Figure 1 (cartoon, helix red, strand yellow):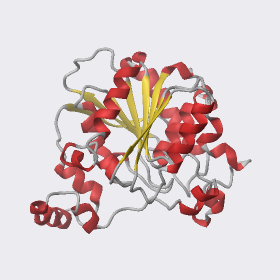
Figure 2 (cartoon, rainbow, N blue to C red):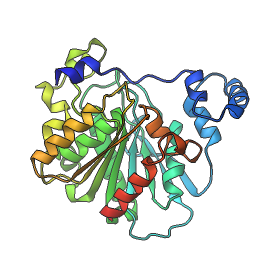
Figure 3 (cartoon, rainbow, N blue to C red):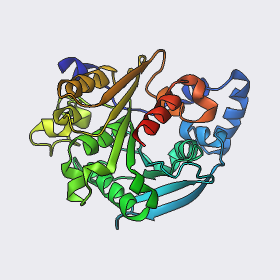
Figure 4 (tube, rainbow, N blue to C red):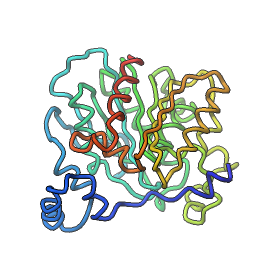
Length: 304
């Protein structure tokens, strides 16, 4: 566990040069122009500009609670060719300090255009709140999905990247959060984690200590603490070149779930880093990690 803590680093935004490297060199000039007219360098904004913008109908800024950060976007497929498909709920990362559902429009498009109702919630962040409030917001957003989206009768698959994978894993493994919202854990068909810090020890890092100072004991903030055999199936995806959240996190969670005879699949992708694995959900960037989307869809079909 100490080796996990020593090497874990905070999720930070990419620079323009790193964002541009994911696109064919012939597009670099276009990216520079887009960044200029966007008023700054935001790689996710560039991704959204380049990604497809069809195949879905968007309901934007729906409140799942009374607060400004308690809003979500729902992406409905234009073509609903699988009436048995579960609803997907995607939680973005951002070190529990930042994030914006609108910046993950490319994720909503990619998943909804494949026939899945896809929900992307915002949740409250530090310093406004500390652990476990952002987990509780996640549970409240799932409760809204269950109460308001008919397709949730087919089940709900939780998906998260980085800190969002931490959130999704706690919802899937520590059933207290959903039960407090009146949601049976049978509602959750599965959890897909992209580069999640499942064994993260925030008390060892000054930057994160205050965020999780309310976790008593500290172990209650770690998804691996709640590994159990009767949990929903887990799919843990990680890139071997991830220097922000080491692949060891996925390995440790897999081992804990395996020890409990639970259902877990772990896949590692060569030459894929912490950001590639989520960018690869969008069509222009699938070459960064070509197996991510097929693995995700295969897992969802298996749970349907």
